[in-house]
Length: 500
Image 1 (cartoon, rainbow, N blue to C red):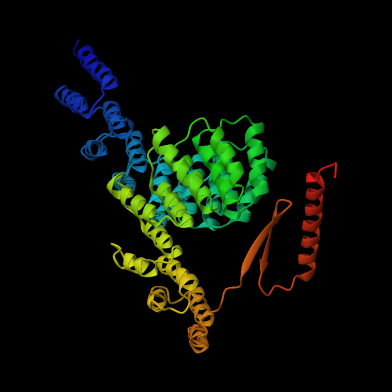
Image 2: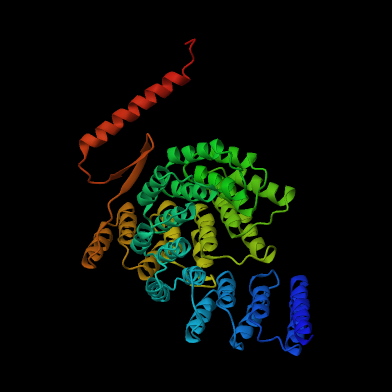
């Protein structure tokens, strides 16, 4: 009879936990569990921790106190708390929970490590992650696919591309998620050609790219400016019948805009059924950067009037860029003011730099210099370079005395960048100040700095060809020019009116 009554109380508590919809209710249920003498029941504790860690009403501090004060907690409870912290705004706490788990001798398993690695990746805690990796090897879990996926992600986020590749290559079983993690690691660490190779190998191994793969590779195409590959990815999206949702649509808009095909970007944007702030921002910024300032500002007005989407920091970057290209100084000031005081978005360094560009392009150099001096934080070298570039256009002789001040500020803020000295020397040379130009070059040489070779690239037949100043590959260049010449003739033949 007593045992039956005990079981019924546990059952009642479990039913109440399933119906629970707030932390207040949970604390009341917890109190009932304690009063009923069930506070050491590992399953009830696990359900309490689950609610506090993974439900929409989560309270991680409450879950943590439950486990810290328990004497009979299951590994699954600790795993849930680690998972909760890894997906929260304080992921570093997940590593503390893991260390406490070890200190208490609680068994770790294949469900523990993935979220520890995820937390380490979010805070770039490479050393902690590597220590946990050693433990994974000791427990023989290095071949677990989910552990491996998160290890690849960790090393990628911590800029250890070789480490990510080693883990990936040692994995005995892979999924599409594994390949996506490896391709992402390459893209985020500048291994762009490697990323393409992994993408090709992924298909060769019989894996079908999913929506996430397409988004990653489209971002890669945008980064390297490979329009042909981007268009092929787009064709695959259509062929596979993938839904053009916000994420995929925005990736396509961004790719086309950054590859110079702004008309295609607008076509995709207009066909998107659902748009979020990133979709609008990508299109506005793309139009602005390609000189379509009026269209960019019109699109911004449409977003504000015809949609429920509110702008973010990228949107305003595009708007300020449009004002810069159109010479709309007063509008630039207005948008910069509204950004913070109307929309609650605090301007970042890039926004201050964009506003300096607005003033600089309009020739208002003194005003731009004063604007920089009033910035709430120390300006970065990009801001000074932006103004110096404007000085070289509007005041090469430095009649206003702004150019000389900016040169000094730039060289003080970034004394090891050879491009800054070249920029200063060229300005002096443009003004006929040959001695000062010579001194700038001499100062650069004395610091052991070398001018970076000029670089440009060209896409032909889906391949990116890079050219460097001083390169002696005359035969290769001539072959490429012959191919381009042939393509131009074919294009002219195709568009020619047959009646002519």
